[in-house]
Length: 61
Image (cartoon, rainbow, N blue to C red; front, side, top):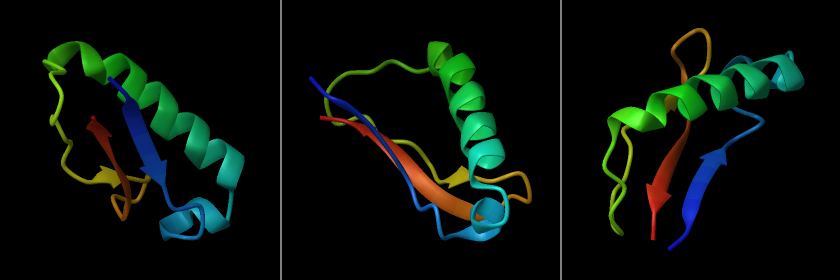
């Protein structure tokens, strides 16, 4: 099984402060995953940056 989190570093406000936004996204989703069952085929809704612009997704394969 693989957990894949994809973030477009050129989308949303990521391009303005990449490390800050990526850190925020990783902290949020790391803490939020406890609310999901993770069987293969599970996928998220859109991952958003701090302005709620879509910047990625996650999935389990």
